[in-house]
Image (tube, rainbow, N blue to C red; front, side):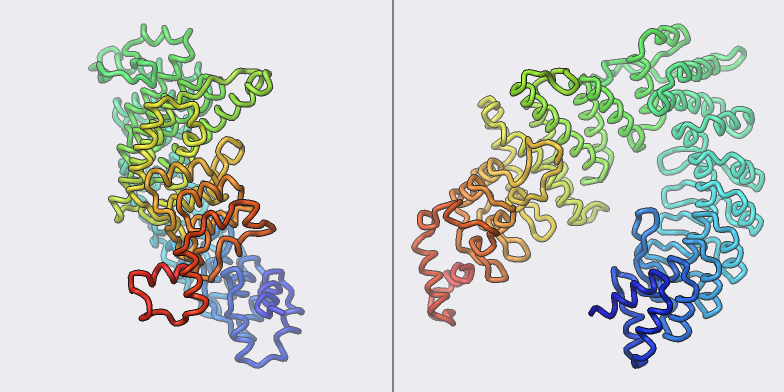
Length: 631
């Protein structure tokens, strides 16, 4: 019986009687060990406090001497919170009685999680006013910010808890405190639409600032579509400049197009903004006119006057392009919403069967991200993933159409994929990897980010490798050269995986809905080995790609053949002393590959030495020792 799990489960489920029966006859040292042990990375007390079991928490503290500061991992709204002390758990879940119990027994009211969140901030998040009041009465610090620099006041502004906001402001909470990215409580009100709290902040001296993206609270309201916040600023012209108000109205119009799908509403807002630009008796506010146009936007230009604006009424597609142009002009390429809505518009075109428009817009967004963001940023990875899914869908549907003669999805024929488009994205994926590996100190340089980028790159390469017969000679040669560049980079991912390991792993598939590029991928293995990939590279467990292939359930003959014909040794052992044959499940080597044909005399000699000549070091040339050890 797992005694730790029994105690953990009883505490989590509030089974006090069961807990007493199980613990009361045990030695004090054993009880202390059980209540301080973790299951699922949490102690019994953490679980009791998370779920509000007062009697269990009281018993664990008073009778079992459970550590009231020992943190654990808990889940709230699907998110795992690491390093959460018991008091944080009780405060976040709204269990006032448990909070009082813990504080009475000396719990630190300013204890923090791994993200620097305090129990007070946790109570503020879900609006537990009684707990907020109690913690502050017991010396909780209202100005401790989390790792992002967000204070308690900021979070109640974002969540719209006006009662707590009034309470904190009454305690002189800093209304102008800035987060790491420069936003203030006013920004949080604008983003969430909390107008009443915004008025309260302004009344108590809140100053309108710009954040690190150059966003004011007014622009933040426009981006999120909170027209009542924009209207409030419009009715109070002393708060913002006329130019800022014009930009906000235009940006709000763009939000109406892309987020609310309200084109008439957008045109009305743009009309108001244009009238304000050329208001009688005031100096005109001219838009910056650029001779440069963007192919992805169909070379559209922003309208410059009311006459041009009125011509948009009959052209919905032009209205959509205006929204993208306006957003890029006002927010700039750095703001994540700029590339997000370019990608969104591309997805809408793809749904309508206009795949060329989608690919053009997504390439434009990816270029924007690669110029602005750090390498291997999750947003850039998301773009690469979207391309992988799009290309997989197009190839899959095209193939299904050829086989069934029934048309593509919804009876619509899907156009053939331009493989130059896939090659172009593959090249950008290589650029992402190269820049990421060249900048190991960047925020996204962790192995997990690198591995994800490797997997995405391999999926794009797989689409090309699996369709070599459709490629022209020049395209095939370009693919081979790019793959050689990739192999030369020699990226290493999770568990020491190389590109070849990834190509042989079933877990590498990202576009799982489509069969066109499922892993393991024999064609990709062949391409990598021809491009110079080391055939017998090992991961941290000593596994070659062949060992990984053995776990593919099942390993296909095509995969085994591609590996052994690329000089992967059949009889190499991993750190557990297992060979490819020993790792196969419900399969025989002979059903996959002829071991006699692919076993060299050197391999046989090495195995013989291992079997009959132990120890062998000092008796064979030093240069052969590593080769013998692998067998």
